[in-house]
Image 1: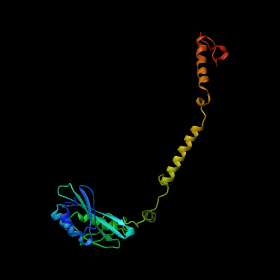
Image 2 (image 1 turned 120 degrees about the horizontal axis):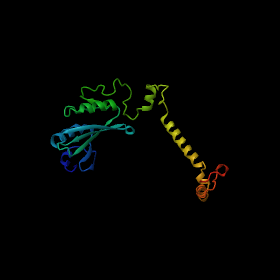
Image 3 (image 1 turned 60 degrees about the vertical axis):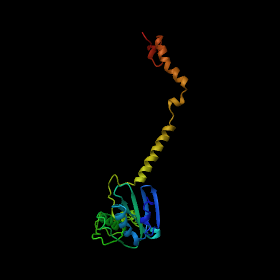
Image 4 (image 1 turned 30 degrees about the vertical axis):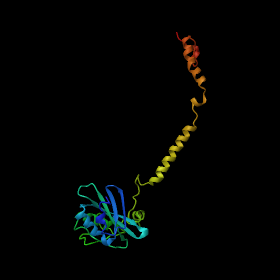
Length: 224
């Protein structure tokens, strides 16, 4: 697919490209060329559908990588156009004018990562109503700390337990039970097989001969 797009891509600064499959490829361009490439792909190459915008937080490098996922009209090729923005609040122009569905994608990225989109008319609360904390998908956001500081565990509930501790206790109890069963002596383990066979046959043989068997009172246990 990248070979077929060669003439189109030759007009842009391609920082990186890869094709994991014949029908899937990714190209990375500078932020300044992003929207020009998106427009060209839509207008001239048939990549007319924006199916999503994803984000990866490279906190060590102080940047976000955004990927605009495009599908062609036949829905048999997918191209991801990538670009980087700084994590300190660098903005991107909205692509709402070209793809109306970008309204939702950009609002979500703004809320979850704090990325502003210039020209977007409604970067307001999307899913996190009244959220004032660090955007929750940024890697510096401490989920455990937020939960501990925001919510209070209710006492008196049977399920208000340390799950890992309870699982560990149950496993230890099962191991102890198995060990006890393995150590407990049984009749089968301590009595020779030949003795058990002889003992079980003795009462039947005595009865067949009319003799008192083991345990018969006053020797009256034989057959009449």
